[in-house]
Length: 471
Image (cartoon, rainbow, N blue to C red; front, side, top):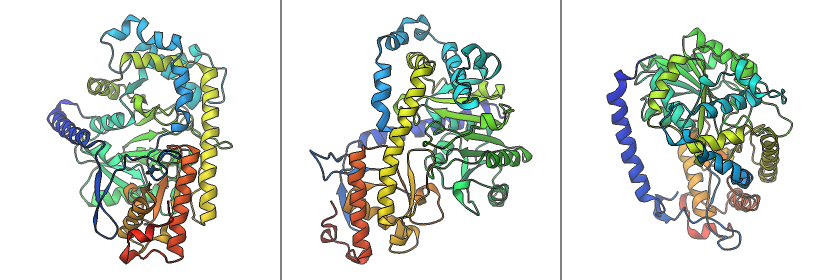
């Protein structure tokens, strides 16, 4: 592992660029978005003009944000209990400097939570003492300002500027920036030779590594998201184990992102890498989780890292001076993570709500005769609109995306942004809106598809008249 001093200049330079970019973003928030339509003309779209079924039925419906808004009130009611709020400020430790990796009590709560819900999910009666004494040691877990922050830290600590990080494709679009903006790492997609929903084979990983090396890159890390974002499937434990064994044979580090581990659909089981490896992570496997997805709390900016590499934790502690989690928030969340009865009930209700919206989405896709990957976890559907594109290219995908925005005022994440080789794949995030809004969005999508299939939309000459009867 490289020391931080050799990278301090690059780090602060990147940090300055990040601040500038954030300032520019903030200055444009809420403004009308100017963009080019599929016919090449400039147009104005106020994409903050969100749809409301009763007061603004013609507004935009965003299906591009991987957040679960269906469970926000469940969490909110729990957090607003008097004893939870008082815990945030009644302990004098929250007012003082402390270990940047997290308060001792919060790290103990996190270790207990990971042991109970990731390492031994079948052991519901596991005691707090048993979990933190012999299963997951609290000193090996930490908090950070979101999973993205921690992944960036791992890139900075474990790799050099310009090193390659292999990521099975398609993958979460923001990984490119997470790894590059500060750490300077280069994300390299791993294209699966067979079904990408099953994950990469060692042969796929080797092909990607050799491709990167042929471009002069040193392959340093492997980053795998399981359950998969955007496909929504759970990789078989043997696939995960084979990928890690391949990485170890090349003396590489593996980051396992399990952000959707607790958002499984009813009837499906997820096995954490902690279980697969029998909690023997070694110095080279690092586990990432966060409250953003399973708890619908992306605004909390609370990511977690579990690693048995103590030297790495010391480096992350230095970086967390800039990206730690506030002490009151740590105390609030730790109190919730220890509430077994509430957590089990919350997760059950969350899974039921996820499944309800998933079935709305997939039932209507079936009616449209649009193929998709059946999901077993996550809060999205990965659908195949390739037969509807004006041409089977990235440009054709972009035209279709523009049509959806211009005509139907719905926004989905295109596959090209997720490094999918096949044009026409789109991720539909069905938990970001209510079931009622989701139904409206899917009906608009159906209207667009009907017009395309009946040739009432002419790609070479799109006009506002083409859009009638869609909304």
